[in-house]
Image (cartoon, rainbow, N blue to C red; front, side, top):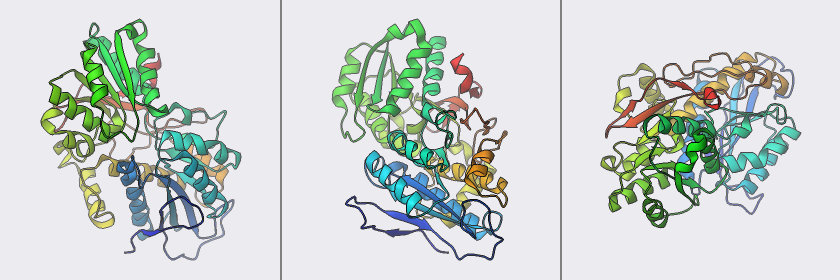
Length: 409
């Protein structure tokens, strides 16, 4: 079995890694459209290094998934070649690599590129070139704009709607409590705050303090002290898992015990709660749409057992408690479904047509009742979330699965 290879490109002054997955070609019928004759060439851009490198396991799991698909004969008999560049969460680097993927590497599509700032930076170029920009690994509203950007589509539930779900939870259970918000100082962080304020309506006056941090911050003691001094009894956090862990540890040190609402992207037992201390994480509330492999509740689940076998064979160096590896596996499976539906027509237009035609696709490792559906005017494949609370060992559900699209009403 051939493992992904790392090459250091010298074409730019940026330090970047190139990961690729390529297998020997098989004799194939001639393809129509933009695909090479006997392979499906896919590009992605990931933070393999830098402050958000914890999310790199998304890209590594996707590479492993395509390796598994190739070993099983490929997609309709065609092998997948994945070319992945490391932008270290730098939007300027992302733009450069997007151009390289399209103009030099001649990829058919860009899949699962990570992060809001980087994808906002590359979106105009990919849409101008009419290159599918599919299943963006970000919860921004921007990926659901088919009229303006018909070649860009999201995948996961949107952060703004997650904020609305938290607001409705607060209104139902803690309507008179003061709220503080700690958010990452970029578009990603602003999205959840926006949804929170919109859904709170007049109740937004209960937000008595909000402050920001930068993604590279190693300490947030000052921010936590400021929010604590506001008298807030609820803290909403939107940022990366590492900073979420810092917040939980610092709150424990100063003895502050607000109701703590943690964004979905950070709500990993492996990447946030365990580093913070499981005892410090009891009571944390979040949303989820995928099964967390660090949660013992899924130990005997058949899908999780299949995923563990996948990890053992194709991604043995990966952390089997990492929700990001589940994310990559599930997103890659969604793309494989789209490409399988394309049959022999791998034109870029047909790829987008098939991506727009998902109908209650059962996403692997999604929670019961959560599926992917799209339409020509709906580029939000996964819309459902479930509120859960950490009991010190696992996530316990709070109510039923929620269709986040309804949170706008």
